[in-house]
Each structure stands twice: as structure tokens, then as C-alpha cells.
Length: 104
Length: 216
Image 1 (cartoon, each protein chain N blue to C red):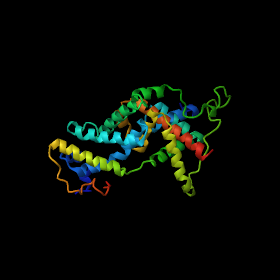
Image 2: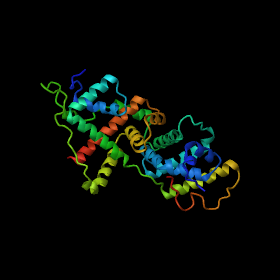
Image 3: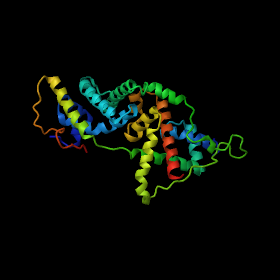
């Protein structure tokens, strides 16, 4: 159990997934962490997986295409009409008219 | 009209206001969830236009189903479940995808290694069997490389687009949209183990592509 090379590099890279998800059993966790301390290559590997995850998160974009937003506004009005059987008394200044509202 | 005070923006009150037919509440939810919904839909259907249709259908489904939403799962999980069901139906109609469970199991059955096996020493190596023969190449993510940062992101995006659908759906929900593991399992009807394996494969692939790009 205390042999730092008990977990080989080839197994390390396959265990990184469960490690990051907190899903390793105690024995596997210990041998992975022992290996991690002893092996700079695997430490670099792990660092790169984390960087990959951060870069992936940067792909996130906010914003809704204007046409889609307009379409959703109509859809909402239609839903409301269907529900109440009443035409909506909109003043043309709802969040779907013109300016795009932003939630902060 | 739309208050920006935090209490009015929490999920429960938004649902309540939406049930009352308040358009501003719908606007907040649309702004909050639509970008992610578009990306997730896009993993199942072939064009952005179809993804937009799927998102519209989903919002209609949300409005119509609102009365039956009991809050047992989070609103987001509920919305994404509706979304992925619609998207997969559309995907099937487009003859592009099959049910997610089938995609996932096909993917999981495939032979896989996070790193090219050639990069490790053979099992019969005298000293270090299965240790690195060709270690990961260090890459520099220096600030002066900011100009090429956009290019790097493009490479990451391409890598994700090129993933098998099941992996792409999971990494999109987890690492882009920030859903947690339980939510993704619930949305996609996959087991916790399979969700983890799909995510692991996807992240390993993105790392490998980055290494190729940044440290060729």
C-alpha cells in the first residue's frame, strides 16, 4: 500500500476522472495521491486536464439571439391567451419588445 | 417592472410569478437558461436553426407543463429533461441520432484509453512497466499568448464538437453549463458510473487535443 509506484502511470490517467469526481474508494484514492506526489509527469497530466476543463468553461456564452427572443415573446403571449381565453393587454413595452433584458 | 432584487429572482418565486402569467418572470428564465439550452440541443440536432426550434418547443412545453411541476427536481433539471426529450425526438426524425441510452452504451462499449497506449512503457519493461515512455508535453499558457487564446478556445470547441454525441452532451452540461453530476444523470437517464465515464473520456480527449495544439 505504501509503495509509491503501486499505481502505474497508465492506470493513473484512467483514474483521473473518478478522482476529480470524488468517486474513488479510499484505497484507490490513497494510492493515486501517493503516486501523484512521486510522479511529476502524472502531476503535469492532472494539471492539464484541469486546464482543459477551465478552457471548456470559457466557451460558455450568454445572450439569446434576438429573433429567438422575439419568437419566445410571441409564444408566451399566445400561451397566456390560450390559458385565459383573454387577449393580453400588453402595452408594447414588455421584456420581449425591443430592448433585450439582462438578468444579473 | 422586472425587479432585479435577488429574492424575486430565485427559482420558486419565478415559477410562482410565471404561473401568474407574469411576462417579466418568463424573460428572466429565458435569459438565464436559453443559451445553455441551445448548446445542449445542438449536440442532438444537425443545425442551429433546428436547435432554436427545439428550444422554442421546450419553452412551450415548460409553460404548458408548469401546473404539473412539483419542484421535486430543480427547475433547471426539469427544463433540461424536456429539452433533451424534444431534441432527441427531433434528432431521430432527422435520422441523426438514436435514443441517448443507446448512444451512451455504444460509446461505453468502445475500446478506449485516455492517453495513447504507445506513450507508456510495455508491460515487460524491466524497470517501469506501464509508466510514461513519452510523458505529457508541457504547454505554456502565458499572458502574451493572449492573442492566440481565441484560437485555443476554437480548438477546444472543435474538439468538443467532434466528440461522440453522448460524451459531447455530458461535457457540455457539466463543464460549460455547470450542471452537477446528479442533474446530468437525471436529465439524460444515465447511471452515475456511466456519466462519470463519459465525462472522463470527453475531458481526456480535450486535454489530448490541447496538447497537440499547444505543444506539438
